Image (tube, rainbow, N blue to C red; front, side):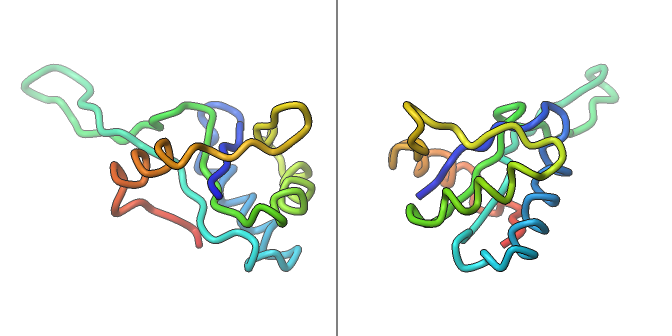
Length: 116
């Protein structure tokens, strides 16, 4: 199941790397299947000199594909990661993304840069 992880805005990639290292050190690689920062392409600068830049699609968030049983363990490990805020919850229960949301985001990022 895919989960949204709220992190410090502007530190999404650095935090993703830190979370993945923490998961690896805790021996939870089998629990996390994939993790990435959804991005979008924008052009910045004047029209004649515009440059192509990747920006986070959802600033302050990254996505994590983890087993439903293991997400609590992962959340405990990443809670200690610098720049980590939280795995989104509702009434104390970890809230996975809806399948439609996951499909839309993953289809938009077929060549996504993942750390797993």
